[in-house]
Length: 567
Image (cartoon, rainbow, N blue to C red; front, side, top):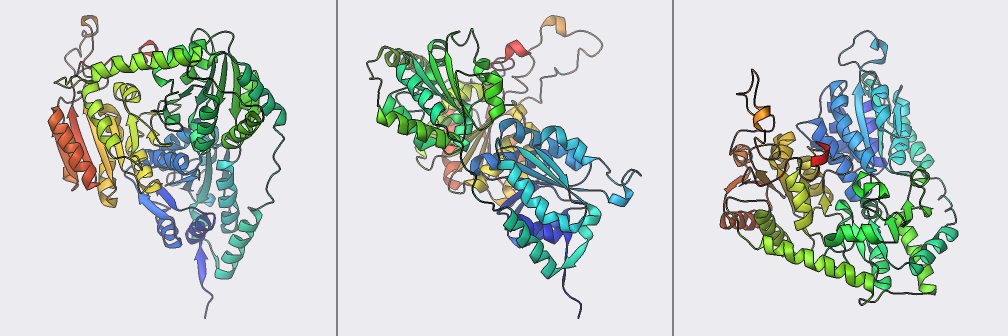
């Protein structure tokens, strides 16, 4: 009797499972359909999407939420190109993702084979590592190598190319087991020795101690690093106000009395020392430069990437894991403690400004405006989410006005419960994020608050929600288009195509809820506060796929949200 054989698809699936993979997102087709099935048989759940871009965004978000690599599977050629969206998004946000693609037969490369593309060259600009398995024996070693690379140093995307002929090669069961065992053994070297951080830690603690107006800035890197307990301890023991970036919200609860979110301009404009943890001084933080920041501010920058420290040239730079570094700073402060009292002038100024701004916002939120502006439905959604208690729902937010206004209204009191467009400002992430959150955080409800434009990028994934019966409620802020329908001036409505719809316009009052109903999910059309409250109550209680089509006044928002100066 001939010995049982294992083909490349089965070996790849087994290697991924042996390396610890639990979920894979993607779209099947030539030549990877068998790989998806074989991976599932080995214990890696495959979630089949309608589009590789959405699958890629799901894999990226999974990496952020779990701290382990998200997996994206694509077909060759155009499938790989579609996957670049999620792959590059992961790298831009420093989230671990491994994209695995099939490719054309090696013997036919350069001859115009089916879906032929130099996929190593195509992916290289967006990844930390791009490798190709040229024989079946390469697969386990490269799977382990690529997965490890996604999480080493600054997390990011990696790429593994497996040609069609390699997927069809075979070896014996014993050979397969030996290759996986060897790859597993090689992936478990002795733990790396941590570089001493004593000097940087001492300098950081001393600078914070002597500061008159210190501030802690919390980035999504701190959330990724599970640094919430250490940062909460730092804030509570020192009394230093904190400012989260959008996806850093919840590392310390938004409801904490030292939150400077509602006093952002004052906090960054007047602080004299800023401890920046897991955030880059990029456009989201105005590059750390005047006029938004004081010209005299001293930055303490904590980052896993030495190149980032060298680029920004902070007063103190500490290369290391955010959780470990903040624990060391806490230990250093414990030996010579200090604490800003609530009566400290800086703390008083921040809390007063935040309180005043919150009161102004709450006065606007208290009004029931119909037709809906953005504030009225966001208040109702906020209250419904808070009523869920703990574990808090994961909030997915994308759009221009919807995301911008929502950031100020929606409350995050637990870490990693907000997902948005991120460092790149990527639109189209919403439904992929929802699916990732639903499988990564199965105890949490997932609530997406989407602009109608943002929703449209990935709207067909509502079928994926229904197929897997995921506890996701999608709320579409339907204002008839990008930013809200036709915003053109008279001088722009000229020429031979002046009767065409505006570039920003969609079909008015589109029935997005009917898309969900078409696939067997629940759809709601809401135009009043009572209708929205009823839809939220019912859908949250059901924890089944739902779309709430929330009709918004087309002229309630602003063009480009808060980025008008860029458009």
